[in-house]
Length: 64
Picture 1 (spheres, one colour):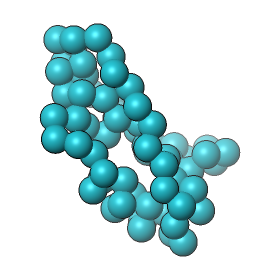
Picture 2: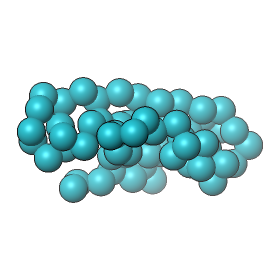
Picture 3: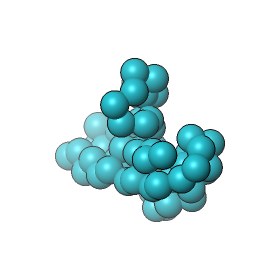
Picture 4: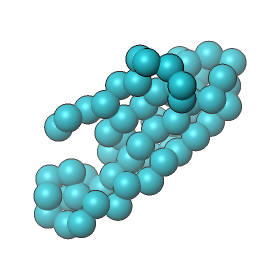
């Protein structure tokens, strides 16, 4: 299963700098494994703003 996440810098999320959106992607057996791997890949000073499985309706997007 492919699980993707969208990340951005915390400063960009706060509106203090231009957006630096990036997508991360992993291939795992379960969504939970993918979620955990993606959380571990988020660099210091960045935050995950969306995570989901492409082509599925249950993609989670944080608003703030």
